[in-house]
Amino acid sequence: QSFFLRYSPTERSTIRRALIHSSVRAVGIRTNGNIVATAFSVETDSHMGIYNLCVVPEFRRQGLGARLIRQIRAICPNK
Image (tube, rainbow, N blue to C red; front, side, top):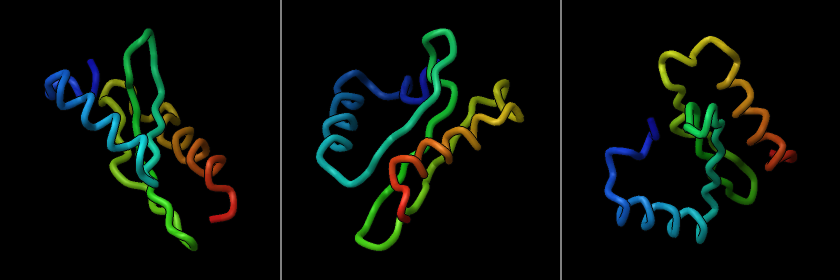
């Protein structure tokens, strides 16, 4: 299941457009075509924050959260 499945297609489209035009970055991991882990990062001039790191319960304890953190740190290596 998708994390955003509870939202309508219109709401998902609005979320995608908002993310494209902001300093917010979304990263995710897919398994068999389904998103099983996601996280968001927000950048400022001197800092980077990580928010809403989520992993589907049956995929937890497999290192996916750590992979997401590494992905975000690769995007923002100096923060």
